Amino acid sequence: MAQKMMLIVNPMAGRARWRGEIAYILDALCKNGASVSVHFTQYSGHAKELAETYGASFDILVCTGGDGTLAETSAGLMHLPPDKRPPIGYIPMGTSNDMANTLGIPKDPTLAAHLITDGTKIPLDVGKMGEHFFSYIAAFGAFTEIAYETPTENKHHLGHLAYVLEGMARLGKIKPSHVTVNYNAGGKIEGDFIFGGVCNTTSIAGFLKIRPDLVDLSDGAFEVILVKNPQNIIALNQIFLDLMMQKHDTEHIQIFRARDVHFHFDKPTAWTRDGEGGGVHKNVFLNVVRPGVDIFVPKEGGTKDIAHVFMDLSHQ
Image (cartoon, rainbow, N blue to C red):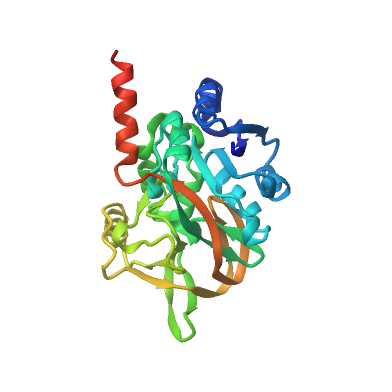
């Protein structure tokens, strides 16, 4: 029986790259006789509404855009009963594409579309921050500002260098937050931190990297990163370099796994959630919600095989 797919397109992502790719994407999705219903988002949060309203009527829900579009799609499905959530296919067209990097999804839209029909599914943990779901990151502090407030135009023209330049410009303005962190019914950490992240990803805004061997996307736990307040600008520069080089066992950087985490701040602190504003809070509770969603990823060697096919065709 032919599958029914819903394709959610964020027309604003990636400088409207979809215009030159949509025919190839649809051709790839339909290659096994699937029928595809296309929906364009009209405003922030629309992908979530579309997924929640129509997701249960489809066999596969495909989204194309940035990580924010994927996060909205996932959040919408989490409002459905677990047995009504279709698996997600992700075609990345954003700037950072953290989840594509983490999942091994190709950046080429046509290859990513073929992956949805030729790949395999894995369960993906989903987090909850208060009443809001998140897919890959909830964070506070200095490096969230660097990652998510870097001007979009700079990202497009300079790529990862834009983050480095923005980070260096902000080094002297970083202020710590005094935080008490309680986790896993007994764990406790207290101190002054310039960054805290609760993650299910190996990449944060295309800027900070977590070693893949530390991350399991389906283990029912987050990777929590805390960065202590440095005493001088030299130590701050070293932290910056260590994070970029994926050095996580240092004097100032701490990483651990947790199923649930409670942050208590001495003053209201701004958060980001999946790259968007997460509000200002003194108390924040985050936990893993299971089951989460299923998402298509490459079979072992699968993406490489598909890529070779396209390279061969392009040279004929």
